[in-house]
Length: 207
Image 1: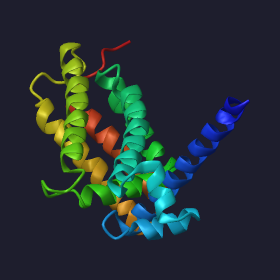
Image 2: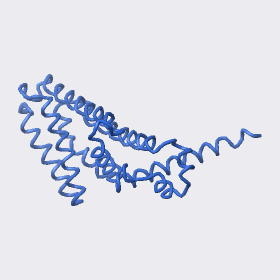
Image 3: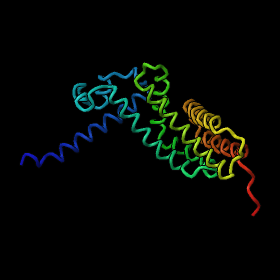
Image 4: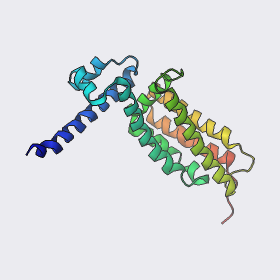
């Protein structure tokens, strides 16, 4: 029957899309979006540029697909770490560092794409503006929850500290790209978590 080959065809198309996305991650991480052409991307996959466009339509569609995939992965770990708010969330900050080290290629790609999206006319500008706003909102929720439970000092400013935490994460990632020292990276994450807890947490009650 004609329809009997449909599952195999769909699986093959899905596999090809996955190959294209993996190739895009590699090239965008190494060269950036602007310096990666459709022909080079197609060659990386081993297909023609028309074959590549058959699956995604435009290079910008591929850009949005790889960005969405990275954000989905990040959102899962951020939500897990910060969902309970308060002191425990601060203690779990190093888990974000381990998440970064588990997939450095995609994290590098994300950083490169952010750097290419500073102008309002850039295709991912609004996307990243919204993404960083989501991150600050999540951090502010975590901090506000800690204040309400009496785990954080009442005089801290959740808006400022959320921005500081984002700046730390972005900065330490950039440093790691330059020296690839995993041990120092994780020790810095742990030291920041400890210092932040000392600065904003209320003293624990005696047992």
